[in-house]
Amino acid sequence: MRILVTGGAGFIGSHLIDRLMNQGNEVVCLDNFYTGHKRNILKWMDNPYFELIRHDITEPIRLEVDQIYHLACPASPIHYQYNPVKTIKTNVMGTLNMLGLAKRIKARFLLASTSEVYGDPEVHPQVEEYRGNVNPIGIRSCYDEGKRVAETLAFDYHRQNDVEIRVARIFNTYGPRMLENDGRVVSNFVVQALQGNSLTVYGDGSQTRSFCYVSDLVEGLMRLMNGDYIGPINLGNPGEYTILQLAEAVRDMVNPSLALKYEPLPQDDPRRRQPDITRAKTHLGGWEPTVQLSEGLKLTVDDFSARMGDRVAAVPSASVV
Ligand SMILES: NC(=O)c1ccc[n+]([C@@H]2O[C@H](COP(=O)([O-])OP(=O)(O)OC[C@H]3O[C@@H](n4cnc5c(N)ncnc54)[C@H](O)[C@@H]3O)[C@@H](O)[C@H]2O)c1
Image 1 (tube, protein in one colour):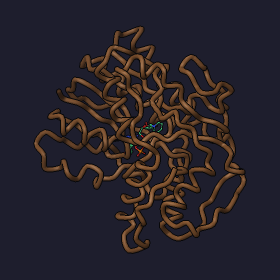
Image 2: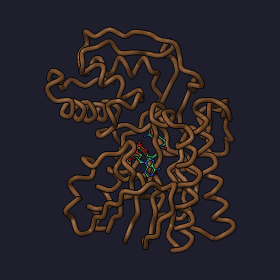
Image 3: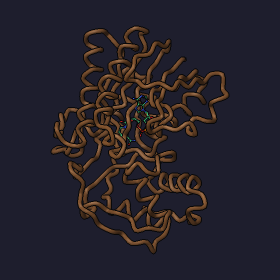
Image 4: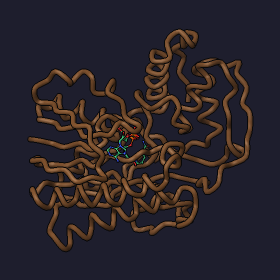
């Protein structure tokens, strides 16, 4: 199959491309390298079945493919808030362009949506029927509302033009190749710990998150794309941890002598986030995450440690959580 991955040079996109290439597909990676990097796809550059196109999805493009995994969009608050108007354009105009392409060439289209569509949820854990509690004018709105519009566009193209869509609501995902400077909680803690600094906990650390290892997420995305269920469908790890527990886990793995320091919570930071994955289990052949947090954190710490090289001391292999 010929498969387009938008945002393929990014964190999740590049892991997805690894799986698709290893399965023997032909892959077109489309990316403007805003938060993605060539090093993530370097190993495929000389492969004749791999094609890289530097392109901004806010501009239309003509291609011939069978499937489109639409992931292009900065995912971390630091990056999507850096240029919020651009984030909205990527979500709205970019998704319009990709849906228009899917319609023209009759390709199946999978949207990488997000748990952020639930905003600061009043329902816990979050089920797909929950319509969310999103601030339309806050600093996260360019992303949250952008993704909500992207979902609307996908369903309208499906109803109006019979485009075959799949919509995944992705919860916090972590793993190797996350950017060191993306401000997300896992990368923050890992970088701070590897640099021998105190780990910054926002608020009192009692807010919760779920953490899905990237290989589990990619498996869910591929099952969704190749199955019959349209979605929206939550993909994430239902194991719920407080931010404090995560900080302690990373600290104990890297350097138990490090301190934790506390700072005020940022605006619109959700208090709790945990997916209900009943739908995914039911419709994606029993899909559920298999990688334990201790195992995934170890792989992540090792990757960051290798990338950060001499700047950090060797990481002990003790595992916690
Ligand atoms: N990582 C998570 O925890 C998470 C959670 C929920 C949803 N998602 C969604 O999954 C997708 C991938 O996330 P990620 O964590 O890999 O992020 P990422 O920032 O690593 O990857 C996004 C990729 O999209 C590219 N991109 C951004 N704007 C573009 C544009 N206008 N044109 C072309 N390319 C563009 C970037 O250069 C990057 O390679 C995103 O759509 C994100 O919203 C991720």
